[in-house]
Length: 510
Image (cartoon, rainbow, N blue to C red):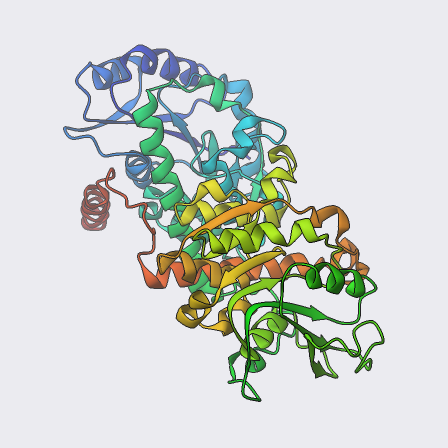
């Protein structure tokens, strides 16, 4: 069955490319309707597009990114919509996969760009797009986004989401991903990074901030639809234990080590490394085991044990341990990570030098090219959203790390039950957070099939993703939906007024 195709092109001062682009499209065997939304043009773009055969809408003022697309979608007459940029000449043969995908029943057919194994895949905007898809539980989409052209849409998708949603592509994408009646899939492969015209460093920076803010706005849609963890598991965390007051009057110490443990085999090594580092209190939160007391630490005066027969859940032991000892400095590690004394001292030294929260410098352990797994993506994105891209993938999720007691007194020790939430609270409170020393916890971390294996559903990975959704939700509640990335470029009101007026006019004509 033949589907009428509409091609939507927003254009601002693109006289040099708009004519050839429109002519190429009209020579395509699909004979599309070509709509050019010329906005703020001073170079004859609208006239050239009309002479080439396009249907042209003119706006005197520049509308900003994506607004013209939304307006074009609102008047398009096709059953399939293809969205392009005016400054990118793409051959019809490269556009076929997008149209065919919609003909097969896909509602949103995305360009696979940026591609893995390229530098563009690690750009901050790609990280933001990737994180949005991960939060929507569509990590298979990687960094593909409605921000990038070409992409194709079904009329069902545009009608369901409303043309106005496409003023902010990440919002339209988030809404589509939250709907069970719309199919979002990868389609063609066009390297628009090579084709796109470079407009200078200032423009690049401006667009980077816009897209990051767009993705945060899209994430707010997912959180509103699916809750503060977007449906991701909490893996049975006993948060009630993290939130309650200390059971006994807390011990006091200058430097305390908190080690949640289920009796892992490396525990004795960890205790020995900490004992040699001028630490006067070691707190073990022993949970999910019947081993109440071990010969490995029995009789050690500076070791105290909080015992729970049942597991308290990931990271809750950190919060419990802090509530049992009042300290000026806390060092956190896991009992399955073998440490050396030289892996402990740098974190405590950093606290003495004025750092409030000292993180494991994981970027020195894990090369950026390897930071493609969902946990690495969401860790980097949170730091980007906080304006701390310098932290890379460093995170409170990873041990070891150290925190000054004043931080926990401000943000609450219970925050440690969700590590990235504590990280957001610390940064928003103005504390100094730095990645100070690398410890390879990736290679040494114990593999647990029931938590890590794909056949088990990767529950630990899903826990981490949920934690970062929760952290973003808190960030948005504490500041703005878009964080520190406001949308100052778009004239959304123009699109809203035009689409509403056009809708009323259409209704009257009927």
